[in-house]
Length: 103
Image (cartoon, rainbow, N blue to C red):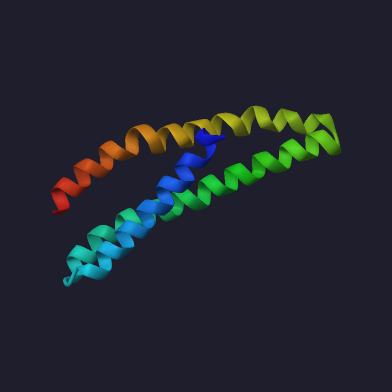
């Protein structure tokens, strides 16, 4: 369960952190540089939430309506795992390199 919720919490915390950074900056250029990280986290939250909700819908429909809905889980679960791995493995490297160029 922690594997599924960790990307949500990390993205939300970074969203709040960078939103505060944009309020502390004076120039529009500095604000725009942090807005790209805010948009990335926001898009990730929406996409990951949609994947998670769709997986839960297929899971419950497979349990209560028809077992063929479990076949859709074969496609949905790897996408969730790939999204979570991307967020935990590649995004910190990208963010570190991007912030080094920003500041």
